[in-house]
Amino acid sequence: MTATVQPTTYQSPQPGQGAQPFNIQPVLADHSQAGLNPQLVDLLKMLLAQSPQTTAQPLQKPAMPAVEEKAEPVNIPFLTAKPQKPARQVFFRFNSGGSMSARYHDVIINPDANCVVLAYDTRWDGDFFIPPETPASEPMFVRFDRDKDKTMLMNYFNIYFNLGCVDFIVLLQAVSPEAEKPTKTSYAAADAMGMQLDPNEI
Image 1 (cartoon, one colour):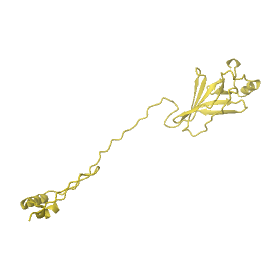
Image 2 (cartoon, one colour):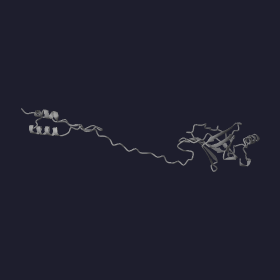
Image 3 (cartoon, one colour):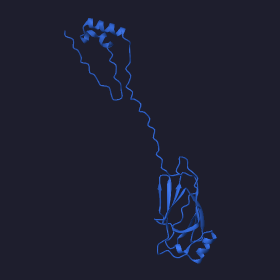
Image 4 (tube, one colour):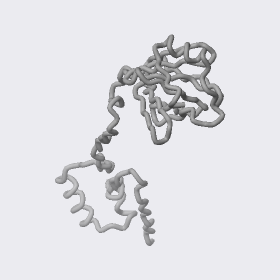
């Protein structure tokens, strides 16, 4: 009678798993059916008895080193890690008769473009004033803390945008032909705020 040897099927380990150890003990115990040489079986048993039993460990992925990201300086004085209190003060006087004083983090005056940009860091927990939109024929009086002797006639046409945490309000100087000359009432209102309005600049 001829013994039939069943072929052994090897399954490759799944991704992320280590190689599984092959248990030869059942094969040695039933070596007569496996068709193994008895002397070879005795030799394998002796080697197994002398060798330490180890368990295969799953493969571990090497830890990736942490990459520290450094923020590049933006060269904006008020834009620091901790929000700063707005230091620039702007005075508004409207044709409707109302007036307002508000603080911003920066005031950028561009005489070449006839505009003024008010910058505000919204991380600061404070009151952020956006002036009402003005018709071209009804500009408002605007005065700044660092130039209190000069008043500018400005219009706000709802030109507003933000960049990150900073909001920008764009005021345009009233230079259009549609802008009316200030009336005596307007001059009186400007004087009441301590403003000096030069009619030659309009």
